[in-house]
Length: 133
Image 1 (cartoon, helix red, strand yellow):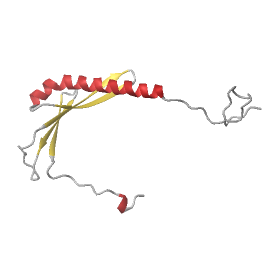
Image 2 (cartoon, one colour):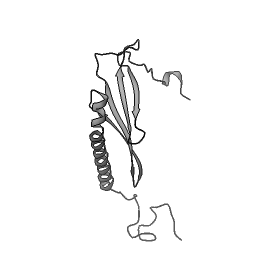
Image 3 (cartoon, helix red, strand yellow):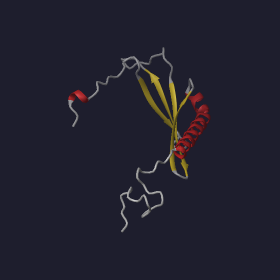
Image 4 (cartoon, helix red, strand yellow):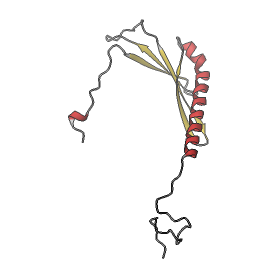
């Protein structure tokens, strides 16, 4: 169990508060509208409203969740930009998967020290954990 000294001191920034609204058509996805607010809960007109989108795509490997920011100033603008922002997020996810695949394919497999060059029972046998009679 963690002692009291191991727990970080986490505080909310009173100058960075947002009210979150979820907007969805219950079919294609979800929009999140983050409206900046002051400490008293009133709207802070000096900061911009933020929008983000979320959706899920069915792939052969299963469901792929996508979350992405949308550069918009109004809800109507965010709705119009949703498809392009989703496509950009999908392209980025595909590229990340390709990069991960390239990294995995380029890993060098180093045999265990003392492993036999001719397989089990060969001249250098004895390096593995499985022993053959």
